[in-house]
Length: 203
Image (cartoon, rainbow, N blue to C red; front, side, top):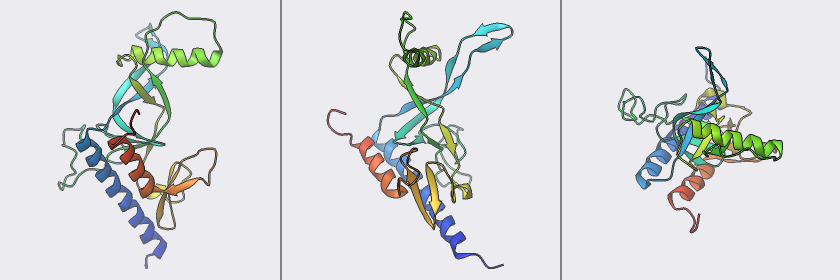
């Protein structure tokens, strides 16, 4: 059966995404770019009948690139960034594609302190900061949670998430409230990597 030209173009676009992610991770690691924590939110519950308050569970570290999170040491659906002991390599010795996520929610670890009479939304933000503190994150450490894994494969073609492949090209949807607000992936990634490698003075 003959291959449809669009199929080949889309696969080529996915391959370019993989290459760009590997190159971006290498550049960020070499530059010692600032990373942030990636966590899983664990709701309140019971363990062996013992009540446990909500908390954040550390998954690893990521580079925050706007609406995307690139794993610095987290194994994920797009490959491994070395957390499995392989040194970030595939079986044939090629660099593995680091895990990629859509940025979710962000908080900072903070000790419980005293509850005050504030708006419900502000109190919830305080509770999440305390949940990060319970997860043994450092004081004021930035914690990313509720991040959505992005599989870099054929599922990106015509996808509805932040990373899509359309007509043989990859795009990033940088505004969830504006579905048509898409920019070429390569340019978006390069700009965000540049900002982390050489942050503006005072940032």
